[in-house]
Length: 423
Image (cartoon, rainbow, N blue to C red; front, side):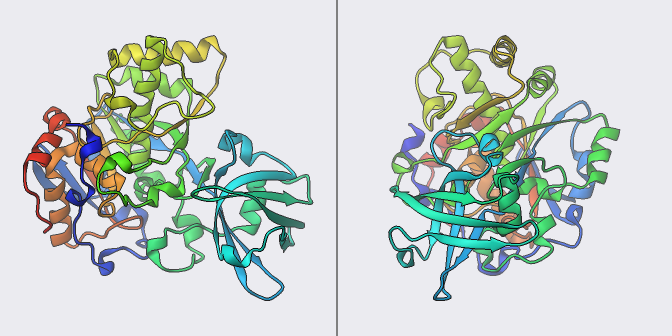
């Protein structure tokens, strides 16, 4: 049985709109924490999460920073066209694209595209700093538009232009405009590398005090980067996963992070968020390719959607990580930068991560598939408990700490062989 054959309708549950958290709590670390281990569930709050993590473990955070990806252009008629910047056009990595000056091409979604006639140039005039941002459609792709963006202040990077002229890209399911407090609350306290159009929401619960409590217990922390794309909200519309095209996202990992992973393989590695987990598991397949002598498309997609499920020689995790470390050293790389399209679904065998901290995800989403892969058929038990006990769902909601059992690597067989009815 291949994950391509999974039916997305088997991964659903009822989520009333009133259970979706529309605003963050007054205090980040006051959010509730559901703890799942060996089939058992209990509760805590994020403020005391250090008590739930074994000493000497490694917790890995995604340090991506959300950019003001929504640009609102007003036509002379007064109508507004929204340009939502998704990712740099071509194979330009996000770190490079954010530092570009004067002009840039981005893949964008356009709200009101029918009002944007061929050849029309839209503009935003901005003061403090002073610049005029111009936009013109270059090409239409099957899923988006390629937009040429130019600004007449060559001292400003594209990151600075977005920060000044754009708006916070709140998730569409919040059904509201960004407020003043979203500027800081839809951002982790450790955000550093600009490039995401959605927050790595598991990290939103952490404060500097919580990070200090981890350090006090001798729990090590490490940081990787996965720039979250709008594809994270992309619904699965196909009947089976075989017809779903997983979005690709840029990842950045330092040699220091690789060394920390190697040192903690026998002590436990906890991914803070599905984005951190996807990054860490992708590293396994990158290093495995290196050891197998396979060709890696560093500027394109290094890990394809179905690669983990294909026949290939698989090496032990330590050797794989050492291969990446040696490759980076040999090529004098201070960061490994590439894209991953990995789809983690029931049937996936985890190599690196033993614990996962994450929020509660939308029904029939690839994120829910990841959770089902991680804890097996008990994902329903976890979500039913959260629904029946007043937990808040999605980006600004509560979260959970999930511990993986080795038996869950094959749990998809149980899911597929059991008739699952929505509760």
